[in-house]
Every structure is written in structure tokens, then in C-alpha cells.
Image 1: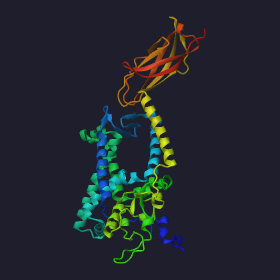
Image 2 (image 1 turned 30 degrees about the vertical axis):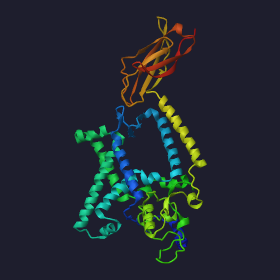
Image 3 (image 1 turned 180 degrees about the horizontal axis):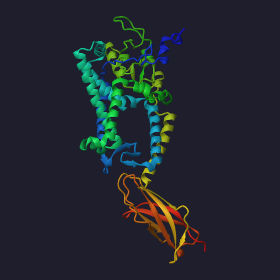
Image 4 (image 1 turned 90 degrees about the vertical axis):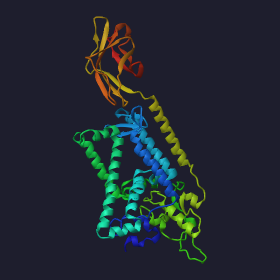
Length: 468
């Protein structure tokens, strides 16, 4: 006998992926159009999110983007803080802080991010799905249209829908690249000949194709198959985590509603409206599942039914398992406190490092294989090689100063130390010190890097002199 057939019907969902049919083919979902107070709140929130998302690349601070994620050149700007290739430790600490924040946020609020702010959900459910509803109608009409022969009406509706899908995908591709390269770089493709920017244009075309494929075909499977976050929730959530949940204490046992008869069952009338509106095709009454993105569509659908039959709303709501079973909602737990302490420590260290970070990073070492030189004027020379890294995103014109002991710097040639954003300058320099300043064979030198009168950083190196 098939193993699946041995499972009780109530547990069947645990070994069954709703996105795939019994014969291994994909189940294409046609969720009913959501409506209700939670959906209205999501619409308002989505407008705000999309406004911020599309305005983000144009916001600048001190002449540079407020947000930039240039992975190609390893340049990042996060709320005005520039993180260049030399700040890999700062980037690593930022990512570690972000991961701890994700763990803490998920522990407390479950997959609130997925349902409300994740770009995949925002664009899929609040943009592409809206276009689909506007052109093809609700779930029933969409099914009929897909089964209908290719007549003029179907060609017109499908053509219009996919044209709009492609247009929005093109906008999203430009949005993504504006965060990677910056709007100024992206604007060059409009102002300058296309032939001069073939790689950039190819990137736009490629990402447009990826987004079109994602929102036109992949859809819900981006959350249930591709994204690992849903699988992580199994270890991140606990019984106190807030999530979209079905109150099984109040709702069970389920039973149809019969007018004029006393009702021994729970409040769930088994109408399946919560399943009909789910974009991932699950039954929320089976409990927390990997496919659930907490979109709140089932809450609105259930509340609407409860209003019609005269029952109290909230059979499906934002709550926790302990709040349902033990009536003891509790957000602050030892686990939450532990994650919060770690996050505060990481943010404190990160903040201190950002505040104390210098604009340049200089390395200065004695040239390999070189010896000290005793000069006839009573001085000693050492030859050094140096590299100066610009840790900012704007031009820096540094100068090297010898602070102690007394001496002078003589550069080989006439090096241009001007540094472009995240740039580097290198060269060789003689450091010349009077013998009267050298008390031991090895002397610590203190040097500084200035831009005008502003000191950017200080560092030390070793000077070798003859033993007296």
C-alpha cells in the first residue's frame, strides 16, 4: 500500500506540497481577490513601500546616494556610510548584525516581513496580481479564460496582461540596477549612444527577463521553492511567535452551518474561503506551514464569513500558539532577551567603528632588501614603500607628515597622491633623520596623513639606524 494512503487525512498536508499535484505536475493557483480591513492596510503600506523603494536611488547625502549596493566594485553605501573594499570587516559586521536582527524579528513577529514588505510579495500580490484581476477578472473568470480557445478576446486580454507584466518587469530591472550602479550611471544609457553602454543595456534586458519569468510564471514558487526563509522559520519560530494562525480551540470541530438548528460544533463552518484566497494554496487551519507568507488574505476572508453568520471575528488572526492554547500572549521571552542583547552589542560595536573610522588607510614598510644609508650631513636615510587607500567615495588629496622624531620625507619622483573615491595611491619615499635624534638601532616613527589642515589618520613604522 502507498505510504501516503496510510496517513490520516488530517495529517496528509505534512507530506504533501500544495504546489505539486499527485502526478507530479505543477498546481497553478487562482486565489480569489482579497478584500477587507487587513488588505486595505496592506494597500496603504504597499504604496508607502513602493514610494520609498522607487525614491531611494534618487536620495543623496553629501553628494552621494543614500543607498548603493555595487557588488561589482565592492562599494556599498548604507544610509550615507560608505563601505569600500578596505572595510570588509565593517561589511561583515553589518551582515552579521542584519542576520541577528532577522532572527530576532522572526522569533517575535514570525513572517511579518514576507507578507508586508518583501519585494517579491509586494510586487506579486499588490502589483502583478492587481493587473491580472483588472484585465482577466477574479479567480473563476481567470480559470475560464485559460480553458477557453484562443479567440480575439483571449488574445487581447493575454496580450495586454503580459505587455504590462513586461513593462513593470523593465521598471523593476532599472530600479535594481539603480541601487547597484546609481541613477547617474544608469542615466548614461539615455543621454549617450546605446553602443557605448552595451554591457549596461544587456544587464537591463537580462534582469527584465528574470523578473518577467519570476512574476509571470514562477510566482508563488519563488517563496515556497526558491526562498530559504520559509524553511528557516521552523528553527526560528517558537510557541510565543506572532503569526497568522487559526484558533483551533474555538474553531474545532468543524461543521456546516444549518439554519434553525443548535450547533454543537466549533465556529469554523468549513466554508474553505481561507483556502480559496491563499496565494500559495494552503489550508491555514492545518497550522503553521512553510508555504504561509502571512499575507492576511485568510484573515479578511474568515472575518467576512464570521460577520455573515453572526459569529465573532478573529477565528483566524495574528496571534501565537500559546495565546490560543493557554491564553497567555508573551512577547518578551528569555530567547528574545538573549537575541536583543547580542544585537545591541553588535550595533554598539558597529556604531563605534563607524564613528572612529578614518577616511584613509595607509601602509608604509621599509623597502625589501634595502639598508639604511649614512649621509655626509650627519643624517640617516631609510627607503620605504607606501600605499594610501581612500575609504570614502569622494576625492581626497592627502599629504604625509613626519610627526616624531624630527626629520623629513623625500619622495622618489613627483607622485600624485590625489585619490579618487575608493582609490589607491602608492610610491616610495626616503625618510631622513638626524643621527642626534636616533638613540637606539630601532626607532619608532610617528606619521600622519593630512588633507589641508585636517588630520585623517596617524600610524607608526620602524626606522633602522647604525648602532653607536
